[in-house]
Image 1 (cartoon, rainbow, N blue to C red):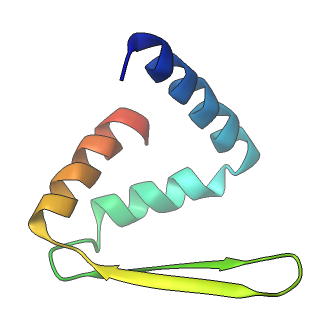
Image 2 (cartoon, rainbow, N blue to C red):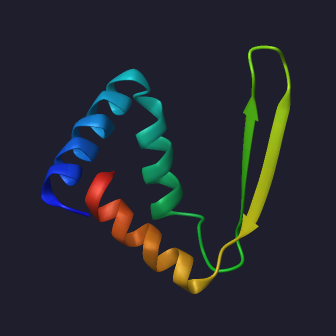
Length: 75
């Protein structure tokens, strides 16, 4: 990833945080608290028409390392 892409990503994240101010607080709380190896993260998307798409994953140690790096960079 080049520097320009990183700058665009940071700008996009700033807009996202302004649009959804509670979400970064949720991420920070999750990353500083209950997430540990073996935790299950579930993601659900509901379309405006009411269609649902749900998935989940069980966190591994390598996932936590990635999330820690992400936390330090974005949250």
